Length: 272
Image 1 (cartoon, rainbow, N blue to C red):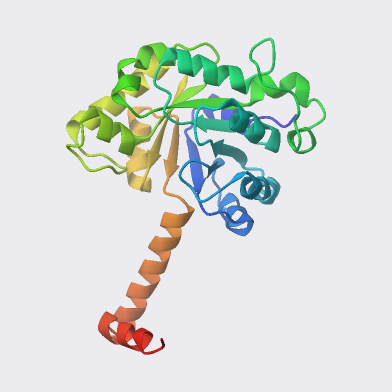
Image 2: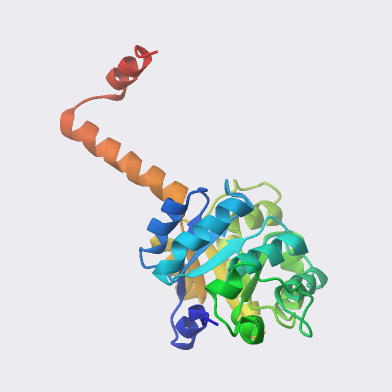
């Protein structure tokens, strides 16, 4: 079986840089996977992606050698096992609020006797190697998302779950929940109390011998997260990067030519 190279990155003392895919397109996935990320994850929770889309995206990314992951829609055994069978090397599971839910998640990630994953590696057996059965339990990585007040209150108990590889922080939902709507949802939190909460999560993870990951909006904030001890950072994603690059290109053109928004909008309106 292919080795999960994320473990090698960590063994070398480095953080993992992850890319994010929410556009259901294999070409977009292929492009992103070739940019030098350590891992790229397909978002089936909030992304415009279903299983058939994800399967083709996994296939398109294989040639790059990047570690492929999936964020599943919910804590549900069918989709977790199906994404593993499709070839995901890591799974991110949202809204894990209790140690019991964390243990349930871990059980779906592993074959017996370590778990209850059902055997039927449709694509994984071909994409990951002939000794897949013997090594799968040790190679796949499972992240429980801490995003609520309940999960934060249960932080140490979740982090102590046997077999859990790490906690992945969704800062938008966590901010919403911890502060009851006081702050608008979003990435790259600057509130002192949120930075303290993020640092507490890192400490809880490392106390229990597991990894901590954070979803970030910018490289600068991701670098700060690494300085706090996060072991994996996700920086932006395909849709945000596309919008940002397109916006910058349009702004550069308008500045260079003096063509303003009003004249462009007027021309666009007359076309209909």
